[in-house]
Image 1: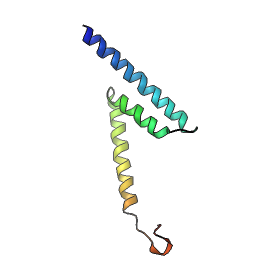
Image 2: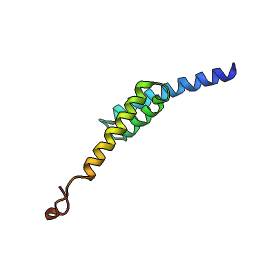
Image 3: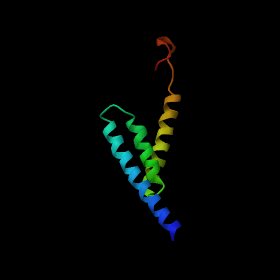
Image 4: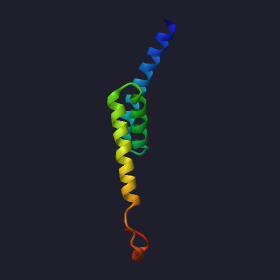
Length: 84
């Protein structure tokens, strides 16, 4: 019974910490601070407990990888110092 209670306390802590990080990250988007990094950390904690957060993290990773690949494949123009 004690192990079950400890796991419930951990779960509540992960949920509270995840939503707290999400809120702090949203505030940091308009104030100085690592807003996106904090939001990703909060989503990571929530992804352990909630399917919607896991799906959102997977989508962010997929779209981020797609954008990274698009930037890497961008043609370079040697006339203006390699910028597109």
